[in-house]
Length: 172
Image (cartoon, rainbow, N blue to C red; front, side, top):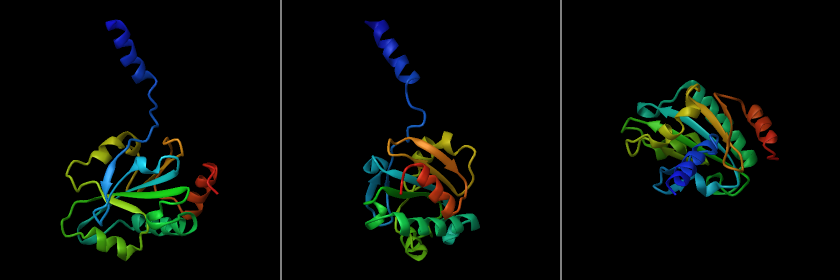
């Protein structure tokens, strides 16, 4: 019996899907909780970036947010881009207490889910995605298919390149 149990534990590690997107739960700037698993069966773009004191972001992040706004207008449906086949989620690390994320989101015109992984001081989402973020810069994107598998990772790419990737994922 003991050897069967050891085999099952060992087999679970061998057959685990390394591309399975780790689930997480986060709060948006309006204090609403959301999780990755809420969007099971959809294509998801995760956008990771840093916000510095005073709401400052890197120039590449500014460009990428503008590109994601274009994608959101074309592909997303419903409040927070949650009702269509595509969902966008931004995960930020805003370490400065003077940054009002709600005000920042409204100023940037972001219409998708966004949350600060540093709110609980654990960086648990960043830690769970560390192996996927290892060679990427700020900002970066992770594409997740309808089977909750990570299928593509990238630094900044344009809206046109994002559309090509979404087409490859059979979205539109």
